[in-house]
Amino acid sequence: GTLAIVGAAVLALGVLAGTTWQRSSVDGPQPAGGRSGLPDRIWSPSPWLEGTDDAGPLGQLAALVSGERGSWTGKSYGLAGISATTGEYRFLDLPDGEAERAGTALSPDGRHVAYWLTGTTTGSPNSDRGPVVGLGVYDTATGEVRRAKIPTEHGLDPYLLLWADADRVVFSAGQYVGGDADSLMDQSSSRLGRVLVWDLADEAPVALAGLGNGYIEVFSAGAGRIAVAAEHRRYRVIDLGDRSRDRRLELSEEVWGSLVVSPGGDRVAGVRSARREAGVDGVPNGLLAGSPPARRGAGVQPVQLARVPTSGRTFEVLSWIDEDHVAVERAVGDCCLGRAVFLDTVSTGASQQLVRFPDPRDIEVATDLLGAPTLPGVEPPRPLDPRVVGGLGTGTVVLALSALVLWRRRVRP
Image (cartoon, rainbow, N blue to C red; front, side, top):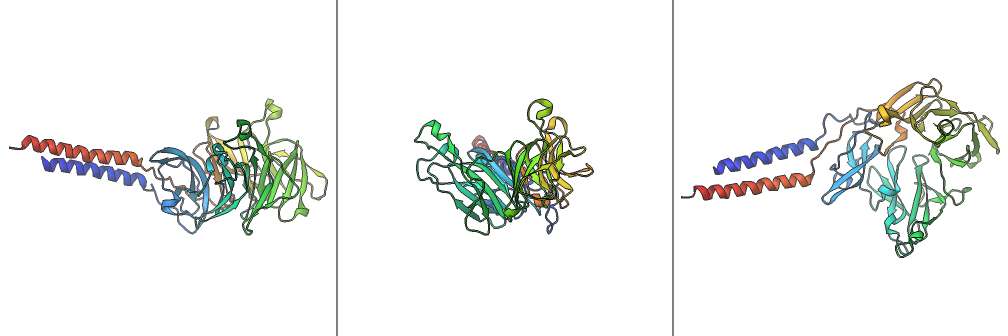
């Protein structure tokens, strides 16, 4: 009887350990190393994946995907990185990070993640909103973080964060008027801040000249240029490397969200606004593309936009690959519940699916990899909840000991 009880307990613990190991292992071979690329499919991360604090940095990232992250005390917001070489998933542990409410930005080459820092303020902190005190840039290969602290009395109100290219991040944040010791009105109010550009070769960010303080409602960046919405259908395209190449454009149609400029600066693309058709703005819709005049001048230049064939159900323009190919995020399946990245040929309307998403969750991709062949996606492991594993293991041991005591009492002479 003693042997039977002990054997049953050992068997149960073995099954539990085997199931835990199986759920924690990757199903299928990893893509061959040495070549970087986007996976052709992205899955939702398990809440119980490892983090970079425990398993180390992933190296160059192909994408970031948000999801619930589990801990012994419950679940919270998490941000998982996907390796560009192995397809492995791992939660990012960003030191002093405020990724949930303030957002993050993945560099085009996938080697850095920009995020907002929390910390100490000089006055009463606005703790309900951070408090955010600056910007951090996480190196995906080494795990090191560079910090740009911004003096603040109550905390920052972030509203702009993106990369102009692989080396320059553009960001802006207001200053909250009040902290926890002030009125609710002051706690929810903020003063607008400057648009800052941080070249990673420099020690600190600098203000972008010519914009002043103000909220940038529609903003996009790429290939060292930024496109700023000036007014109705008018945009400023600012060249960070050579301000003499700045341009002012007036579009023939409204676009929804950002206007994206091609690498050579000679073409623009955006998602058509639905205002004229339905009375309100909305997406998804068709893709629009056009070319400014060849002559550059100080005045406003008209841009005639044309609908790209077979481009309906487009949510967002991600990046130009070259002067004739643009990557977009588009709805797939019924009711627009699924999404995928497509590569569209502007001149012909031909379209190729690159990356399939699990659902409309927050996903960022390394746009420099959009022009390279994709790699087979690797589904991440689904580890069991360690609280459940610990409870089952402890319960098995307690149950076996109790059964052993009762059995020995029963058969004792």
